[in-house]
Image 1 (cartoon, rainbow over the protein chains, first blue to last red):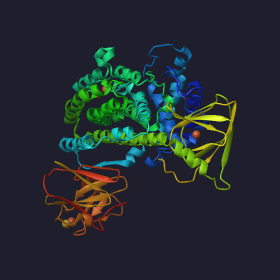
Image 2 (image 1 turned 60 degrees about the horizontal axis):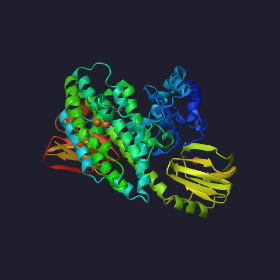
Image 3 (image 1 turned 30 degrees about the vertical axis):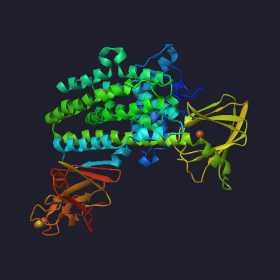
Image 4 (image 1 turned 120 degrees about the vertical axis):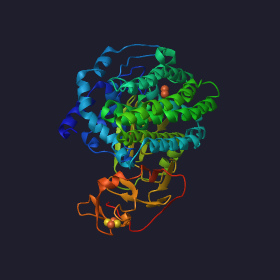
Length: 457
Length: 106
Ligand code: FES
Ligand SMILES: [Fe+2]
Ligand SMILES: [Fe+2]
Ligand SMILES: [Fe+2]
């Protein structure tokens, strides 16, 4: 951990990059380097303490996950892909500049603690583990997931707008799948004996064994296109929830810091083994919702190949590694397995909460129009002019948002917007991702904490 | 091999075949350890925590056992979301229940 002064200086330096600054658009069209983070909201004090699980709906969690993703992805080679491969050379140089890299590295450890330390408290592992009890435990966990009804399928098909809900889900996957298995690449370098080569075999499957059409990220690109979504990396940067970013970042976190290599093996095992069956219901969801218009090859490929990857992770990597280096590493492997499972559960619940909010925007407007703020409640007023865009964020409390004059669009996803005119209002539940954009010459709006009941989500 | 699952607040005692266990809670860990004292079989779940906090003192002959040595006998355990899961090398009779006055150093 660094001194608070050093953290503050480097945080400010890191955030001063124009790539992280505010923009005039919610979508970053094909440029993988623009990563708006709302620097104006981010004071160093927000990040000095580790969040608890109950605090993950805070805006500082979203901001820290965004910054961590920028920091980690500086280690990847990203160039624009897709139809218009226009390279903004300034953005490219500034993203990979050594100055920006350095300030990112200084703040990284504190951000990691802010985001991931809660896992140490939420998950406790003790006792004497051997390979038998380890496999019995993991098998039981995986069986439980395999046998439980798919909550994804249930929640998304039950949405008032299943197509938008499913697109929102695909957007949440996109940050990960469009550069799939990049974090894994950090673990295939070096030499850890014959296991290096076993891991490499999983890696080459993910990368389509050199056939670009077979690369998993390429298969996902096709699926995005079928679903009428932009298939370029981080076009939807502003619409990733913090919990979705946590899934990408967790793998970088345990792969960049090789002190967590054994956790990585556990997380790898969990993700490969569980994808073998969770992708079945994902495939079913896409078929059901889009009625065959969207091909499900991406999910189907994983239903097939991840049976092998799960087995390879356990039998070809974990078991021999434990045999060689001793059972003392099992609690760490198990920790990785369980931590990723935990983050995945949190991300699922967060996704459903967002979908439920998207489905109840009308009710949230109703609720807001009936609400009378208590006397003396703090109210902030803003005046913005046409085209002014508030980069997506979330609030630590439920917010009452009302328009005094003019017109503004509140944006909850690329497919869920609410236009608010003078006299109209809405409640924005805490922890729900949203942004806004002024659509009249000028707009005046007020925000205050909403202290009423929240029935929608 | 069996995974035994129970809510944290619903059980602190466990019987696996004919061997007793108790859930020993410390600041940063939860252990599931045998109730039987290594000396003459005294009730370790009714032990006292030593002044230094690092030993359990058996109520029968006041032998003191380091948490380190107790930890070595702990069953494989994962605690998450208010649930404890323990892996037991047994097929039959597993029982768990709550008992008052169990030692803990929280
Ligand atoms: S039985 Fe425990 S000290 Fe003798
Ligand atoms: Fe894959
Ligand atoms: Fe895989
Ligand atoms: Fe807001």
